[in-house]
Length: 245
Image 1 (cartoon, rainbow, N blue to C red):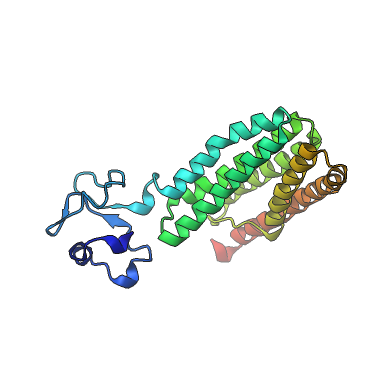
Image 2 (image 1 turned 90 degrees about the horizontal axis):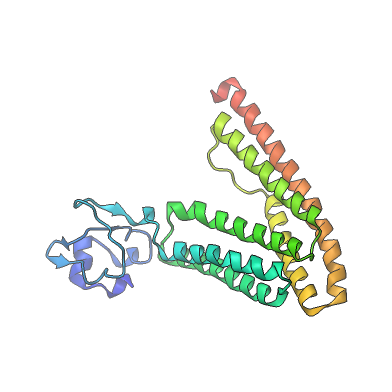
């Protein structure tokens, strides 16, 4: 897209060919740059300038990846409704579509340098809302036991509390997901897909496998919660040491 800009405009913006593929096109000026008008080439963009000041594109909410994330959020209630009414096939297809938007927004953000600060927070929140709603729908539809959902929610709530404590009492501001946390989330997704498939197609073998998967989800929920707890204790101990003050 950037390579289609007129050469005169690229020179005015100071863009080199090697920069076209990166994140240097994060700043735009409304009106004119030099003598090349920018209004026509960027009609698809929202209003970027207020009072003639430069605004970082990465700070904007209305980026294409963020729009895909919002589509995923808007699809969530429909997925929950389908699963709660035991329409597992349609719910599964909707979930597959939502998962595809998750892959798509990440690919677009990396390919075109469209990462935004709000997207870094919005994307995992949307994923958590989607996955939590799926398990609520499966529990309401009697496809999974309620206690499994309570374990998953208890684990997520505990991690949220630990994150709040870390932000309040330590200097750590970026909590990376652990290996156990990633494994727990991955197994939750795979189990949800298996449960939807087993119930939707009435596959007795797959339903039997789902019983074992649900126990695995429960075990990893406790293991990942314990892992995050140990990390939190280490952070608190490191922050309380004299060398960290």
